Length: 76
Image 1 (cartoon, rainbow, N blue to C red):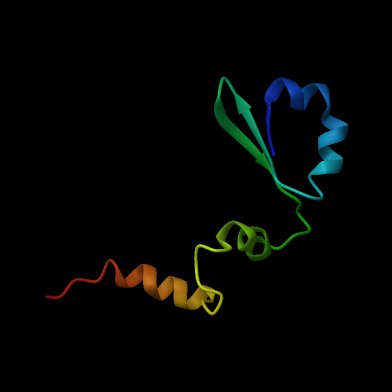
Image 2 (image 1 turned 90 degrees about the vertical axis):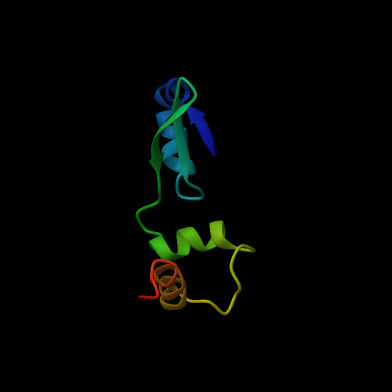
């Protein structure tokens, strides 16, 4: 969910409740300035929803890391 800083300030209690269900992105003058996340959700679980459909289901964090690092290897 994306909200303005003014909206956040006016309805802090509402967004403290909502952050348990989804991340909240706060903007000021159209620019992202902050992100509220539920501290009880592990980071890996939080990003898995973002990655859904973008990486194959059989990939894990180790294979993703290896793939990323292989792009920087050079043949000397």
